[in-house]
Length: 189
Length: 366
Image 1 (cartoon, helix red, strand yellow):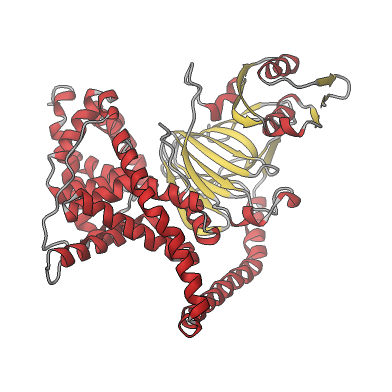
Image 2 (cartoon, chains in turn yellow, green; image 1 turned 45 degrees about the horizontal axis):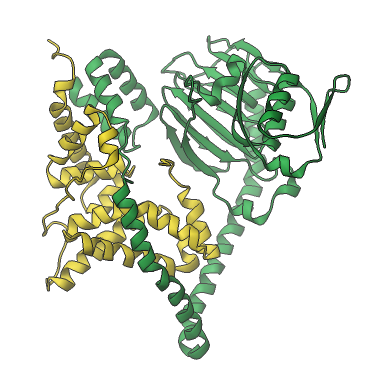
């Protein structure tokens, strides 16, 4: 499968200025896996995660040309998904005020896929090790390592300080390194 | 202690927060510890989130959403038609937004106009104070140069490099037009900067390829090892750091290449993209730097580009009357072959009629 990352800014421009549905579809498909996973960590239901995602993307479409003014679309979408997911919890669980600190975060369980089978031992082990990290740690790690977001982006999305983001990230790496030490050479003196 | 430092730097690198000095330090830590190196290298692997199930779900979700896209469009135009009193408000905001947009564009153009000569002359002056050497290759030529600091430069055809006879001060600066491969001698105290028309590339010590031909639509820098920092002449506040195996492509500003080929679409198009560098599958040669070893490589490129490349490579001129052929994509690689052989092989994959006139060095395609 094509692993190339599409040119987000270019697609964003086509949607904003030319209302290009194909470009919108590309954006929708591209962000689907990571953003529905992120929505799931808050709503804890795959169905509602998809609903939240579709709602957010529809709003994006309806923004018209002001969509062109969004500087970092990925970071913007993460924040939109977070707010929409929290709103969803308030609405359907009849909660008064929900924020990220007052709820537990859950990460979507792994499901076997073709990439997994093809991947080598090490990367399979890495995925399992990542999955055993504490939820927030894992979320920070995924947002940075797999989504390529910056400390500042993650700090804005999760409402934690940049230092805390770095702390989580270093902890995640430390635990990963430990979990993967069986692959490494005997410890140095 | 050093483990904590390693993880700290690694974290900063993964988040694209690391400065070039930090990346340099990280590279050194990795070289010193094989365990760190293995861990680091395996972290470079990115899982592909797009497995079959997810792909299916994403498409299904879009099918469900698709009808709403047009409905929301229709609703909006209906509401503007039926209830003008309501629609005037958002429109007003829209217009004002445009006003701001245009005002800011106008302002930035004015700033550019006023600062342009300033920036330009000061740079030129600064460079011309010390004695400089300039080395240029003609079409069909390649050259290898060793700079005063030991840095090695392979200069591709039709390219030009300008550098001081010795690097004074705390910075090593050169100017490049065209394509070159750099293997920069490491010097932490004296960063090495390559200026091209569109971008400036700052390094401490690494190997990479820069392609900045003024008549092409884009410039690019591909990193083989180490790290480089790229800044742009037309957006000084933006900086990017490249990791090994990445390349950056920058659209050349319209004034640089043929003006007639610029349409509005291109003007507005995104100007910067980061991709992975590409390999020839059979022997994992890096395509971006193959020229340095005498390999002429085309990676699904339209014949238009193929012929331009060959013009530089063999110092010939192409006259193409076959419009269809210009857009046809070619993938091939040649190892020090003659132009007759190359044309012959290209013709095998897609037939075209050509005549090669040796005296005038012209290839005519009908």
